[in-house]
Image 1 (tube, rainbow, N blue to C red):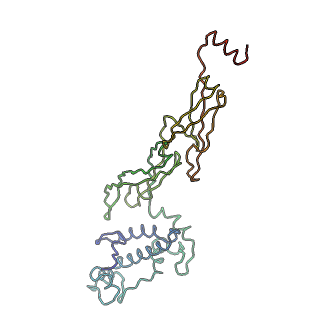
Image 2 (cartoon, rainbow, N blue to C red; image 1 turned 135 degrees about the vertical axis):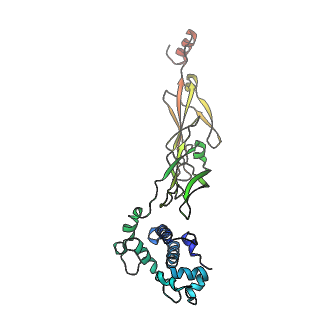
Image 3 (cartoon, one colour; image 1 turned 180 degrees about the horizontal axis):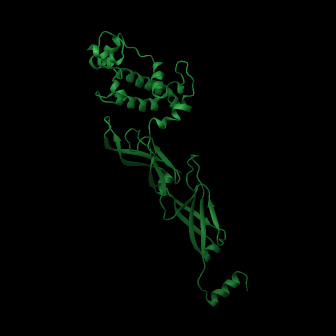
Length: 322
């Protein structure tokens, strides 16, 4: 049969005139070139196909010839309609040739005629996006996006990971009946992503009758960590040390979020509230690949609960108090 016009419009072979109109509206709004500036060539091709399919299937004469003889038969002009009554749809005899410029005129008929200007439409004005798409929610409804929490460990957000999420949603089939479909979505968690980061899957939400599917959004949530706490791009750790260690020094051994062992010598006298800063050992910075924040060590000095008279005397001698 060549081109499958029914498949292009995503309708069944028994589709009614109303079914064809609904399918055309939804697909034409999605693929109009003015709404697809990043992939305009692909959009132009699809928009032309959608318009041609609607032009054929909405005309009873063309549709009957197409159903019996296929695209080649329709475009050859060699086959008459099967019955005189078929001409009631307004079709004309001869070979069918679709002029790409007609695509904009078909679109215009659906979305306001001369009230809406279409760029590239054979001499029409070019404020299409301002008008039609600004008002598109009046034509095709889209439900509000659905948000789901995506719980991530600090290790996930440090190293990055791939998460597979199984979703279940309701969509309407060609006849408008709701059905449940399941799908697995892959989410690539990038190193350095923060709590609140949103990952959007367009039109992967549930679908209501007469509307396009809504968007599905996953929102990153950060699980608490037993050792580290995140502060922007920095990692913070609280380290308790004895007064003796605060005065004489200590070597810290830490395991990083990616499993490395790092040694941090503390040689300065640690006063209460002191904070040591280790550069480039914090969280990766997602917008600056290769860069990391700082690791900040906050010290809590543990003082002895009591001292003997001998210990006090020795401290006075050492510290110059006696």
